[in-house]
Image (cartoon, rainbow, N blue to C red; front, side, top):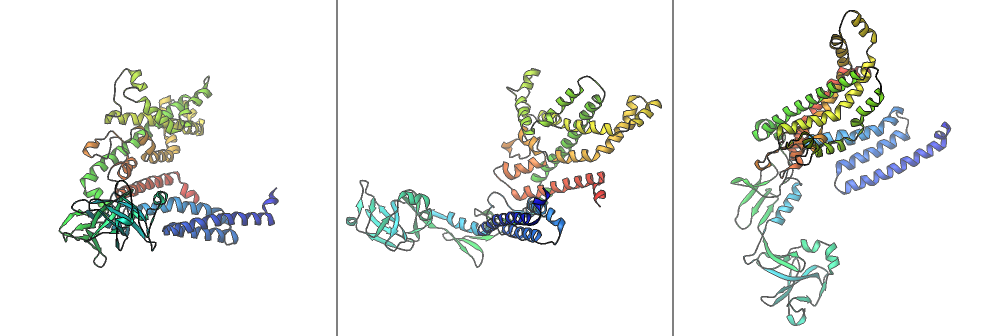
Length: 512
């Protein structure tokens, strides 16, 4: 059987697999470069070269096993970290999403105003005799008809036109009408500014309707400024991704663009009370939530493990029942608990004959979060405590009993210290996991309760990761730059906790 994977057959199989992989990655590389995604395209190109070099040469045998994992690690771990760090140094929020070039283009499109009378015309889209995009305009009020392109106007004699019952021209000499189907798939017609008069132009506002506008904003590339043509006001680049009025920095043109502000998002977390105060509250609750979760789940898991460590009838059945919450998908369990906590129809209020609004009170909401997490987490600690109890030498326990120690003393002086020594890395890992336990908070309480009418972003049960989500996606003002800064801080905290856990477990020393 092993001979199949050697010799010419193995070589042919390797060539086929690499050829297919290379073809797919090359296609993706071309698409990435064509879409302007230079970083993604460069990575895919490097991946193609690395795969072919690794598997078609004998440069390094171990690399043949590690290269797929290395590429995935770079793509899905290193790259997101780098991207998050970079975005944390940008003004990247609602109104500042796009590039500067796109921002200027949009500002010029929006920098228009209608004429005094807000004039509108009936029109038909088409092409003139030279093949240029054009509109056949019917000025019914003045009984005037003309064909307008981007550069010129051609007046028409009404006697040469086909006019419908509403007085709207539908055909004209040297004018080809465009069908509705073509208009639906080609938006080029609606983007053109058709010539009118005195600095005004006609813009298609809907099917068969055009309105008269004039440009009020102009961009000067030499000075990198925007100018209001009508009032003479000048908008300068404020260095934060907006063109701001020269004498009134608070007034800016929309939209802005992503602009580097370096460490301002980080300093805002310290200096701005609007960001600092909720962050401190959320951080304290995150630490309390993670700590209480670890203590409660470990205590209950250990208690059940001690109880079932003795011989009793039906012990296997009890053990199977206890691990059911762990075997059930957590998302389903959380949603079921959310329904049980419902203030009107929930099973918990019906059983207790109470009318508690669990998710409207900060205290009750936090209690509900801890209770549900206890239900989800104790089977894990039950399993690892059961295994750890089996690893404690029975001779130690017997020697302590012979020396006159009662069961409490044996547990306090021998069993518990040995368990903590064995399980401390897992306790640290559990703390790190619950520090970022987004699913529980988002699905159970949504981070609430919070006073949204007062603009409050942080809810009573929000932990750092759900608070970051609210900043990035949960409000009308989505601040990705600030959310990225908080994400970097969370990453550093979790990395430090994980590194401490690795040192505590001496895993790094083993591999060193």
